[in-house]
Image (cartoon, rainbow, N blue to C red; front, side, top):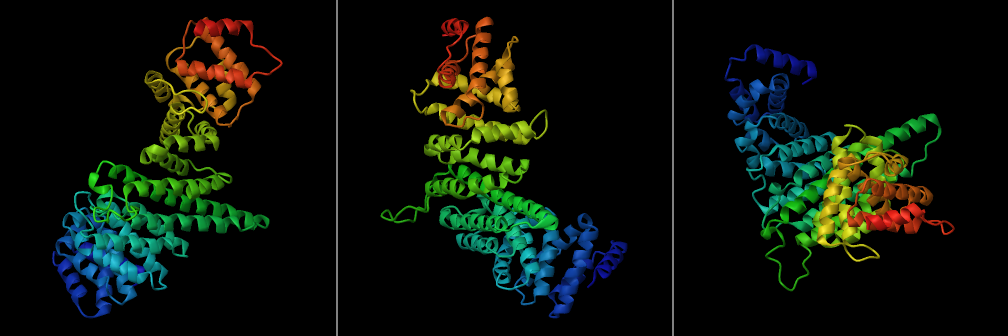
Length: 506
């Protein structure tokens, strides 16, 4: 049925909206043995829902039409399966579709249909099936369990694994959205959680993204037309990478939520002598390893060509989550990030996108990431003893309040650190934060400001503290001394005023 016909059908039905037998008539057509009538019925339902969903969707649902549409997903007719998927996707916009538990009845048919369609060459059918699956996974109420057996949950994950590995980019992109929605706590079987299956799904997702990124990198632009194609390809890669990161963020959220559930820690049916790979701990360490070996390199390569705030927001939220997911590795991971210029990277993001009130969500994510990374680094210093609990508590408070206020580039930050004007409250905390960030960067060999300029800025900062009779937190004072020592030219000496300042402050 063509689009004009669908529109005309919708108008005719709308004109006779008082006729309550319409759902029953269309249901009889769906139940007929004639495939042409079944497809026509599905097209009519689609036309009505597109034209007036709020008015007619409840009537179709009360007539149990979703039940019969789900049954048609097992048809050998690709047209009927596609039409049924399309109808169900529109019906899924109505909350009654879920409260009547149609999805619980029909989810097995959706998964089986998806598994079967992926073996065919019908790309549109792949996409429509994945779109329906993603809608159900996203909209299903948490209090109504969708997968009632471990086997069905496993099959759903395997179908998504096959879909994200599709060589057709549009299919893989739809599968990524469904995967992100699937990685919800209430969608997983407990106990036991099938961590091995989740790991296989995430590996397929990350490998597909890496493969796509590498394919685009290998292409060489020639001339203006190819340059435009290259820009389009970068945009396309960015969207695919963002969807991949959203899937990984969902997995990280899942790992954090399972930490508070004893029954989700490991598979209770695993033999005591067996190697315990199907555990939350092993899954968490996999997330860290996958991020380190695949996710971070992909994002850094993408950053060489363009920077998208939404992508970086998701990326940094993943890194922040990993501090919580693998707590015994947080200091080591923080040191690796710091030595890979992540303090500089995050500050540059804040300076570029977060001035004023713009990109407040990105600013908050950047600040949270820096906060936890700085505390991890300060808790396990390279060359000195760890600070006391009292010192860490003081630093924690000033970082929490000061980091969201920092959105300046390095020259501006140095100028602010050197400012001799009277400062108190938020402005002084911001100075302390800036100094600590320079200190942690230098200690991990990321010297993104010159030693001479930093030396002068720290001197001015300490002198201003003396003039105003202020005493900084001990950690800040120690950081100042370190920076003076590391940045001082061997041929120069500290100003006499600064000697007095250090004595008075200490």
